Length: 222
Ligand code: PMT
Image 1: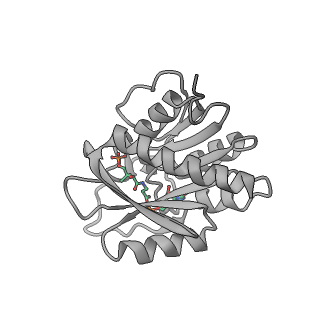
Image 2: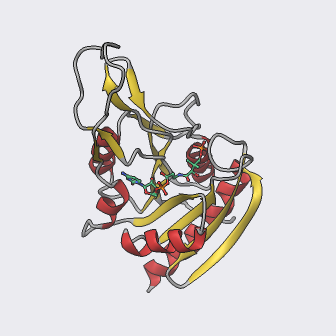
């Protein structure tokens, strides 16, 4: 009898977009569908892990056996992750978290009484960096959505955010990345890298989890 690859491992995964409220009826967001993060959650559960999914607003059903926490904004996602991350073995940040939010959240719907308007934005907390900065940090895997110089920017995020691994996708291409059925990833860690070529997001998730499990176990044994 073989033990499943991630048996006894607890995994926290973020997925989907965040919504940053402008007023009660409008928000800033992006094209993340949640498919990549949900595929990772499903695949990790199938590989024997205990999975908690912190999800932005998406139109997907909860993968079998996963615990799901729904959030809307980056600040709520940050709060939910920080509340869950203690005792997690692996954290995967697959969500497309908004980097900025409107500086002011107004209570009433903004009226159309000006020809121009300026929206002032402030930076959101960086969830990955804050998880990686914890003394009891799990194995931390980030994603990088890039439109150019993928390796350069991914490696920069890997070291700047003090991650254990980063999975980069080229989101300038229509058939991969945001809201597509398929994806391709270039995966980097401090001492290595691997390419996971174009395939459906579930198969890709299984392959990425294989790479993560290898490096996670190597770090445990070091
Ligand atoms: O959801 P799908 O439609 O399936 O699309 C999948 C995807 C393209 C969204 C996914 O594969 C992906 O690339 N996710 C990361 C998107 C992103 O926000 O990339 P980034 O390069 O801007 O951010 C880098 C990393 O920092 C990410 O792990 C992100 O979760 C994290 N981050 C970003 C900002 C912030 N405030 N906190 C964070 O933790």
